[in-house]
Amino acid sequence: MRQPAPAIHLLREHAPIQPQTVRAALDSLLYSAASARHTPLEHLWLVDAYLLDPENPINPDERLLALQIVLINIITAELVRHRAVIQHRAPPEDDLPTVLAQIDRDARTENVELIAWGWLYYRYVRVDLNVTPFAFCQHAHCDERTRRRYQAHGIRRLTERLIEREREARRMLRKHRLYAELPMPFPLHLFGREHLVAQAQTLFESRAPLVMQVSGEAGIGKTAFVSQIVRQGIEAGRITELIWLDCPSSCASVWEAVKRKLPPDVLTTANVFTNRRTLLLVLDDLSLLMNDLPTLNRLLSALAPITICLIHPTPLSNIPFSVQVRLDGLSLIETHTLIRSLEGRSMRLFDGVALSNAEIMGLWESSHGNPAAVLRDFYGLIKNE
Image 1: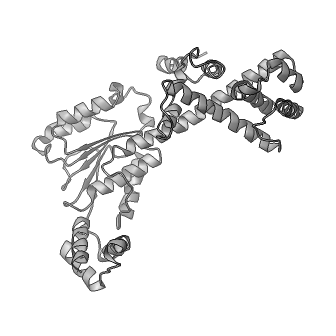
Image 2 (image 1 turned 180 degrees about the vertical axis):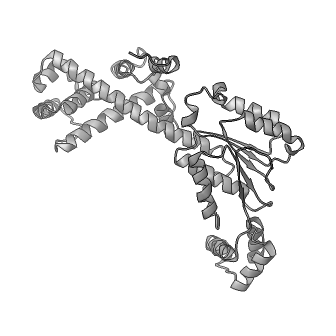
């Protein structure tokens, strides 16, 4: 049989979400906090997601407590779901005779999934009911060996659910982390840029260009444009790591920032994971790097296979594997649409003041369709009215 690559084998060997670690975490529900042993599962992102809720109280063993709540919620939800399918009562039941009768009804369905989740629920969640293994076997019409099989099956299913939810939690927390790297915390509607945004998204999806250059005069919206493209890529899960550097001071500082943020093997072609990831570096404003273009070119070559976005008023020449996106001023129609949208947002502050079509045309002509100038002149006009 072919042996897995050493790196892959190592990841599998030390993966924390395994039936034995899940069983150990479940056992922590049965014992006091003083005697409970900490498990690797306490470091799951699911636990981080729970602890990010500011309403959750601080506890000395908060990570263990959070893990226990995650496990309780999964077991309860699965039992409720399986019982709902066959129209059985959902837990919790409050008295032992009712519970034992429900175990009997579940067992008569001969549904292995339902029986297994039921045992996990009464064993680890409703410990207060004191459903002993003997009592469960008696009412589930099985022997001790079969009950252990149900338990093993249930723990395997719980492990699978935990892996699924951990994967989703990682996606969610990674998105929040990447959003925090953006210079603009909220999504924007870029009037008149829809076609260019779609083109840029296609380029990112194909991963054809290693370097994208976004150019245009000051105030034209280059940073907002790139920020929106990156946000959409994050939302779609196409960007797995982001480094956004605002006006980097030197090529050496860019290199150091990349080395601090990314593992060292990312920049090697031997990394088997690189082709499945989109690592994005944004250099916003190259004014301090323009004095040494040969060094900048060498830097860009050394940073492959990272996708790089350069934001600068004028595109750089002789950049290999680059594509250029030029942002021009808005048209009169686009400026009109933008201003009407701004008026709708400004009604509370300025009592519904609206510009005439002639005023909008004059504003467009004076600003040459530059979005920053449009915003400045618009608010200047309505404040004076």
